[in-house]
Amino acid sequence: MPQAYTEDQLVEQPAVGLFAELGWTTVSALDETFGAAGTLGRETKGEVVLVSRLRAALVRLNPTLPPEAIAAAIDELTRDRSAMGLPAANREVYTLIKDGIRVSIASPEVPPSPGPAGHPLPLGEGRGEGRAALRDNQDHK
Image 1 (cartoon, rainbow, N blue to C red):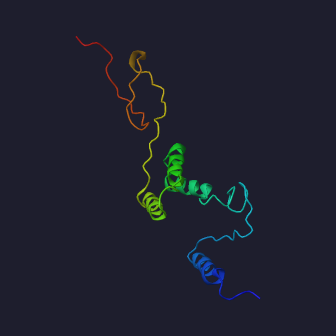
Image 2 (image 1 turned 90 degrees about the vertical axis):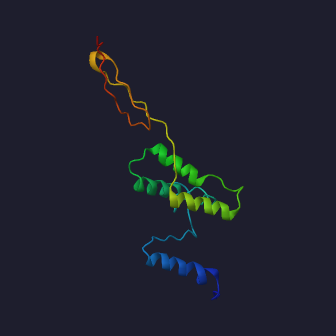
Image 3 (image 1 turned 180 degrees about the vertical axis):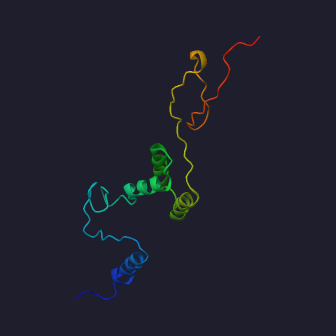
């Protein structure tokens, strides 16, 4: 006979029910299978972040960012914080989620376009905007 006062009955099931009422999709991972096609898409129980779902959410929220920026944000969110105390680690991740993550990515190589008389146009500096500045390549006397 199951006990009436278990953590599952008193805490977990009411929380699952509440999340379902709020519109969240709930999954029982009691009999979880692992691997890319597994229940949650993780390799082991030790993977606490569902990276494939995190990546999909970041892409949906930041559609103009290149894949390198998304990968950098995931790296920052999931980096090892085991040397930190739990409150400090939680506070740091909360701040990253709340305030956003500043990432730096290399500018893509943009081949120069030929300008007047076959001279290349200078490319602008910055985050790969590739702005071109026109200039007169003729000698003025």
